[in-house]
Each structure stands twice: as structure tokens, then as C-alpha cells.
Image 1 (tube, rainbow, N blue to C red):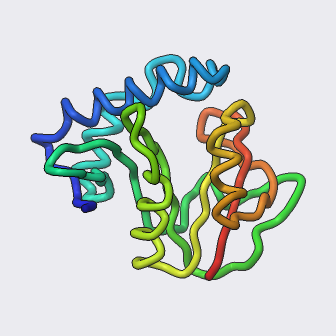
Image 2 (image 1 turned 30 degrees about the vertical axis):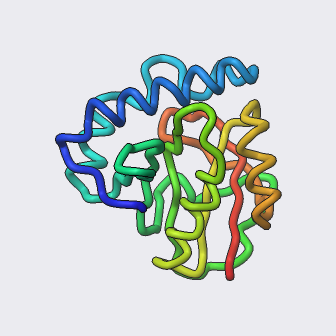
Length: 160
């Protein structure tokens, strides 16, 4: 089951984000969520805007993600490539899950595609796990986008 997060879920989301950070570091991706990002303030804002979600199995939250209707300002310019199309799209951010639970990305994508026919997503160059999952689920690499702080991210898109 997927549901929108509430402010009462904040501590759970923080734990899921910490677990996601530990998994990325263990896989050699030490830079993506460094420096306290995503911050508590960012997660509170996600909840307040109604874009934070939880994946729940047997009543227990096992993953978190953000699904935002575009346009995303950081996706306005893409370098070394181009978007597949200019269709209205949603963006997935801040996916994190507990260790040992499989099928989370499929659940997130299945849910997201009930909201839109086009999804854009970005990830750090070192996030080999996410890059492999995006390829597995038919996303196309489109180029490089820059975050608000100027950090580059690899950008992907899929339209169904």
C-alpha cells in the first residue's frame, strides 16, 4: 500500500532516509546524500505540500519517496542531451527504503504512473543501484541537470 505521509510520520521518514544513506554509502555512493541532505526542513516541507509518500507493508512503513507534479525548475535546462518530449510530467525524488525489502522501486513507479504518463527522475553518478533500476524499468538517460546548489545529476525519463 502507498499512502501520503503526515507530520506524524516524520520520525519514520527520517529513519528511512538514514537507512537509505547507509545503503548508498555501503555501495560506494558516498556523495549523494552527504552534508545533511535531505534536511529535516525539506522533509517537513514535502509533507506539508502533500508530496511525501510511504510504502507500507503489513502496516509497517518500509520506504519513502516524493512525487511532485512538474515542471521542476532544476529540469528546465538539460546539458549533454535532451528530454524525450515536453509532455506534462511528474518527478520522483528522495527514494529510500529499509534493507532487505525488494520491489520498492516497482511499487513507486507503478503508483507514479497512475498519476501521469511521463516521469522524470535524476540520480547521482555514483548511485549505480538506482541507475540499474532505472534501466531495468525502461527509463532512458537524457542528459545532465544541475541541482539548485549546482551539483550535477544524471537525468532520466520514461513515457508510457
